[in-house]
Figure 1 (cartoon, rainbow, N blue to C red):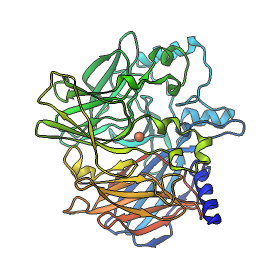
Figure 2 (cartoon, rainbow, N blue to C red):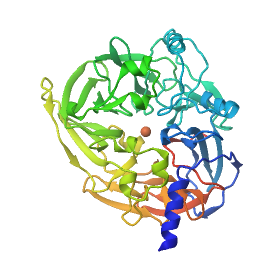
Figure 3 (tube, helix red, strand yellow):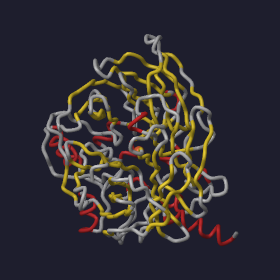
Figure 4 (tube, rainbow, N blue to C red):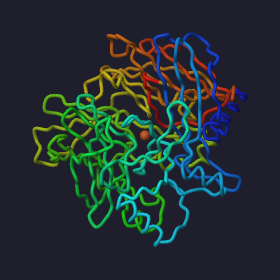
Length: 488
Ligand SMILES: [Fe+2]
């Protein structure tokens, strides 16, 4: 028992410990069998460096971005990883100084801040890149890493070398973006938004064709108190912005030289506000209220009769953000040290568009969850049955300790659990010519604390049993999000 507890402590710490090595491996050693039909590359992104010689970041979200690629072919897996050579990374390497980030701020003069903002508003391409450690998308034939600053970082999908800042070919400007653009399969376009602070704050919803770098505005929504929204929802005809009462204080954000996290104010008395915007006209067609809650991630949303169904990984307050400081995370011993969210379903009745109606929610699972995925290709913006997530295990409560498959139609679940391991975000890959919704595999990068290494886990999505795994030569700190593409 003592040795088990010791391993758990070690594992928790490793999940937030820098990975400094960059490697390229043609054939990872494989245990079990990787399906031969699985062809393509999984890109993962997340924070992987948390300190220089002299100084350390305080918050998990500020770790420097590393991109990993797992390429599947004929039952074999090739692997490569590289830090993105962003401006914060090169500054840290050349000066030993930390850069400003989500929670960290380096003092700059008001004059410099105004100059930088003016250049950005005028569309000047300064070449500056940000610590884009949140997500990966492919847009306009380029692979890019995203965060909430509105300039993505382009990288080479083969070598993972950093190519620089990505600029849209338009004049839309904003201070705060969203790292979770929503893909519209019918229109083959991404929908996203940027928040612009100023005398009048606005949410600027836009669409951009998957092959284009030119955005077109869907709606400009003025708002007195802009809220922090890490993601949003889209159905066939509507975009839903869920304004949790985590308010961005825009003046300190622009002029105060403060880090984004220091500009957030939790104001639960405001409640949560659902704005429903028509995707095509840009009109706000309804608003709904609920009790205060917070969610980083939307799971899915779809239209059903006269209702919009919105599924969130939500909790009563933004605990995960405020408890994601590295020091306490590294020594976490209880599940509440790394809080997860409830699987909540909100129903928005569109037949009453004129009133700001109160809405409640139902729980779709007893599990506490995060990093949820579905069969995107088949179920995005549609009714669905299965979701896959990380969750706590009762016997291993210090950190995300297991993967779960949740059947939302009957509130049941199956788990994949192994002592001493900490899995990251699952991702569903559909089998070719699959007929069932769960016909495919689940991919997840799992930290094995006992071996002090991570492995790529492949689960059979229907049975939720392991098919195979491939160990890396190093550990991988807990990551955020990723992308699977068949072409590379
Ligand atoms: Fe996210």
